[in-house]
Image (cartoon, rainbow, N blue to C red; front, side):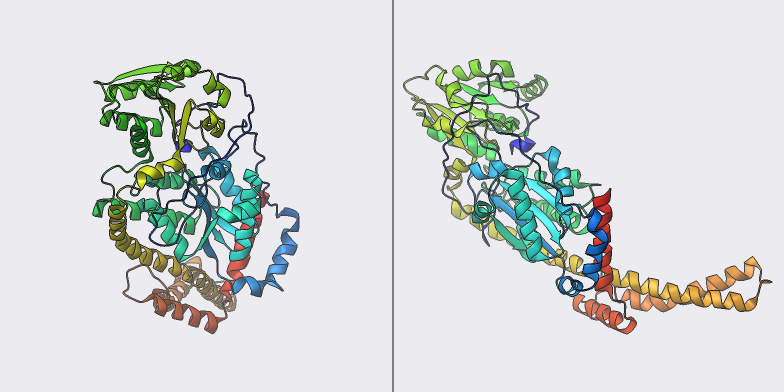
Length: 533
């Protein structure tokens, strides 16, 4: 969630000393009602993250003609028998530990580039990236299901440096209706670590915002995410799933409270690092739990001042990034929620901090950033206790039965909306037939008009030419009206989808439209043109 947290710079007040990391993975906690879901990845933590080599986009350019010919001949049958599939390839808090997820995390600024690289792969038509602290999920429309998954997995491996074999251990794959249902459940907060948390819906909305105008974020994927937003809104409006502690930030505040000798923030010295969306939520929940004084470290004071204005009865002290080490030395509990791609605290930094009171024993670090702001090797110190997003499962485990009951209520809405989306998606199959049928009729009309005009000689006036043209258009449009009405699935007709698809297949056969191969050519040509820009 740090990716959406703040514009916190990765500028550290200390030298980038490398240290060997140790990894700690929490047992997976599953809130899911249906199949289990994915997780997220990023760069190594105790070692300062090395710069990533971006995945190499597949270039179709010089081989475009031969590739198209192969698809039109020997390979065409293989592809046209396999319809395009919606697929999701991902990892999440239920399937992979944070040390894997942080390596795969894709910053928001790189989402558009990632869509371009994914759509440059041979078998990927459309793509979207959903990257949060709890998940990294790649949604695609694939020309070939198996080949598309293979290409995306290899792309993720190149991006993160995680071997394909290791990715496969933690990866989840869902296709078509299952992939759609998964995204709907994600948007509704059913797949979140904290059931019903609201920030995930905002993140799904942001995927649509970032994707607008990006080549590859096209009709199916865009429609899928927009429908997911509708589902998320309905679930929150029509159920009480959002009641109670329903955010990662609130769970982090609860977790720290559970670890204090006395369950109270009244006397604890609290430091919050990062004043972005996540940091502001941490402050909000701290105030709700009785904290009346805290220090906030941020790159600039503007955001802290705005937050201070909202909580006028709370003493919120701003400190610049350069004072982070000194501020940490004066704190008992430290919350971190920044977008830094390298750790803010390494073992040697924490070792230099003065001890906390004997009553508390250890300084508490609660890190809700992905990539992590606290290097995992800090956990080795006897003076520090480190918790990350995976450790929030301890808080989430409470009231499990109540959360599952609420999730069951939401599933009714999800299934209803799933059927609506599937009907819309299936109706898209008739679009190529409609286009080809119109083009077929237009060729005949234009040819017959040309024959008529040539027989009439050169003495025909422009007014007469227009009358003949209008007559031909009127005849064609009236003849096409009936068949077109039986091919459309726009809700204006109470006609079952099965009947519409039967009509489509009948027209394809009667007029030999060959829409599958023609559509395939259009898709491949579009990919070639995109790759050559």
